[in-house]
Amino acid sequence: MMKIATALLLLATQSTNAFLSPSLTTTTPTRHFSLRAVESSDDANNNNNNISRRTLLATSLATSLAVTSLLPPIANAVDDDDAAPSAASATPTVVVAGATGQTGRRILERLAGQPNLSVIAGVRNVEKAEKSLGESSTVVRGAMVQKVPSLDAAGVELRKIDVSDTAESLASALSGAQSLVIAVGFVPGNPLKMNKSAHEVDNVGTCKLIDAAKSAGVTKVVMVSSILTNGRDWGQEKSPGFVVTNAFGGVLDEKIVAERYLRASGMDWTIVRPGGLKAKPPAGELRISGEDTLNAGEISRDLVADVCVASLTDGKASNKVLEIIESEETEPK
Image 1 (tube, one colour):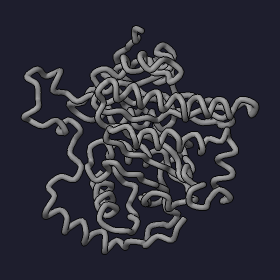
Image 2 (cartoon, rainbow, N blue to C red; image 1 turned 135 degrees about the vertical axis):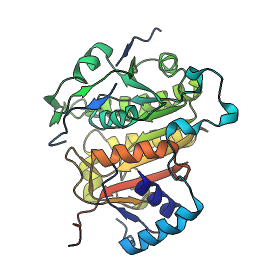
Image 3 (cartoon, one colour; image 1 turned 180 degrees about the vertical axis):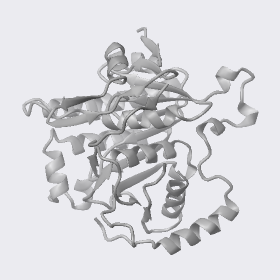
Image 4 (cartoon, helix red, strand yellow; image 1 turned 90 degrees about the horizontal axis):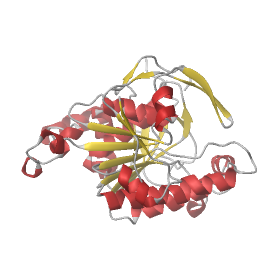
């Protein structure tokens, strides 16, 4: 996590990219249950200036003299002066919407492992989610076949959060939360329904969730999006990445609407735009770049989860678009 924080510092102060090691380490029904991974998953551009390991190390040493903690625990995000006397009210609460998805599960796992933090898993069906989060299986998600690791849970609260619900219902489900991670997205399936599904989930539904978050008093939102969402505005509409991805329901055109809606919401936001998502653990270095700079590349969902969690509390990610991929370069011998 320290390395992600250093990358965010570099991104905030320079026009270059950072290359880092991946070794980061209505009534709402509820369930309570603590998250621990029991098995890992086997599955799962503009020219940018490379920063050498020597440069990165020098930068880290220099900044460490002035910054004692680039990434404090989420629990420390509450100022002492503002802390309420009761333990319950002093504990920050974060909601992960789309918690049963491949990326959402990973985000949930990382957050649940942090002390003094209340974690809520937002799911479409509480009963099904309680079962699926505790099972290891191979599932078919639209056109994708993926292995899903089981999670042993106790301490995470499950709440129904379905973006097809009303804004009022969603706001009720978000009640008491200070932070929200949006990891929802339509699943490609029936080609005759993809456009409708993408519009309802990645555009209308996500915007509704943003409205609900603001109404509920949420102050920080991290949204998982995609590189090339804004491709049309920087001449990438004919690039292979844009053409192929947007063929699935025009999803990039739908996502950019929700991105712009979040940016205009008045809440603190971070938009994380990963490249093509891989279920396998990271094999290359994490590359963090600025807005509208990457038009190709892939990344492990594990790294996406790490960046999302870091963005919740790292001020350098405030009101920023982070485009991330995994470098194909191998470790020097």
